[in-house]
Amino acid sequence: MDFKSIIRDIPDFPQQGIIFRDITPLLAHPQGLTEISKGFQAKFADLNIGAIDAVIGIESRGFILGAPLAMLLGCSFVPVRKPKKLPSAVFRVEYALEYGTDALEIHQDAIAAGKRVIIIDDVIATGGTAAATAKLVEQTGAELVGYGFLIELDFLNGRKALPDVPIVSLVNY
Ligand code: AMP
Image (cartoon, rainbow, N blue to C red; front, side):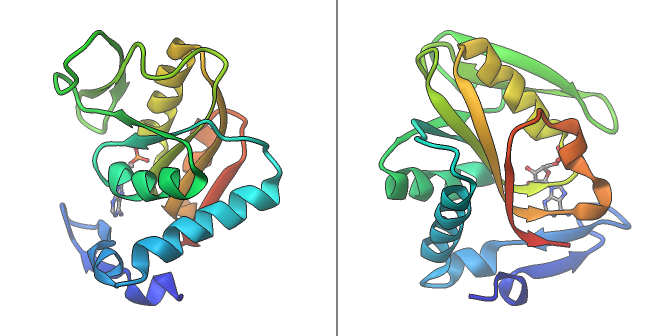
């Protein structure tokens, strides 16, 4: 499946100068989620990173892509959420945005120490969100063994902000 021809480019959203990569047409395709999940599975298999115990999905598009991948891999799914959404005790990481800061949280008991996990999101831009999520994983004591992104914006070089683990992307701009 040619993902790029189905992803829709929306110029100047949410602000002037940004080309928003809209994945909703790909999600709407009857085979979209299946092909994305299989694409991740094949690329991670090529990397020989070994067993994956959990997929960590970043709110909210990381949930849409991460959950079917966890199902395909037969492993756990763990949500990383915006503040004040998770009901039990959390670890929290704050990270810088262009203006101000944001935060992400994970349940403290979401993953057992030593479990091997991958982080999934739709887009890596500057890498700030994915780097913050790695810090949350570290707090749980789990081992981060890879990242998967449907879309990588190469010109922003976001992978430079990430820890030194394998990074899979299915579409590059
Ligand atoms: P960043 O922390 O800069 O890597 O930004 C990543 C987050 O912002 C991802 O969760 C994306 O959903 C969103 N994002 C950033 N740039 C774009 C873009 N051009 N099109 C769609 N989503 C984007």
